[in-house]
Image (tube, rainbow, N blue to C red; front, side):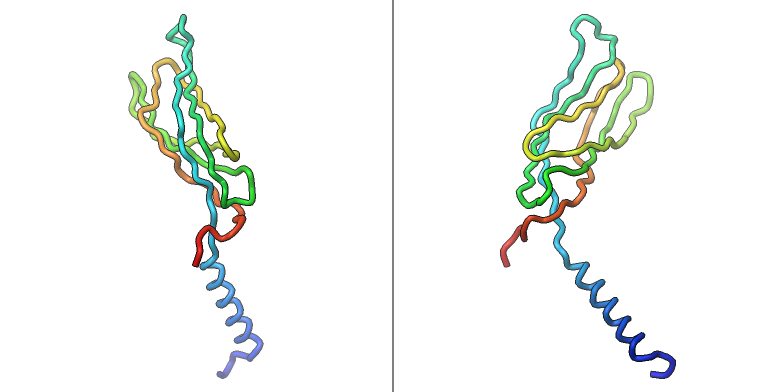
Length: 129
């Protein structure tokens, strides 16, 4: 091969081999489940801001870490404004934990879903060959 030296060719082969092996690595994520949703409103003053709260269960049995980042995607409705889709970032921890968000009196959460969950360091291979 004219113009390409053997050390350069060897380096290219090693880079290609390492890129292929990194694509086949297993990534682990905790399993997050929304257990309950609560609306915390002041009983005497309904026109005050209120808090949306969710209790979430995290099964991180495949993760070597005990916490990490995740996002919840929301669809918010408001009395005299267009519906808005937005994302809030939270941190998960092993077991049960609560997340919350404050809303104005004329806002409500129409829908939500757990969106992005950051990968965690794997404890072991989560499946058998």
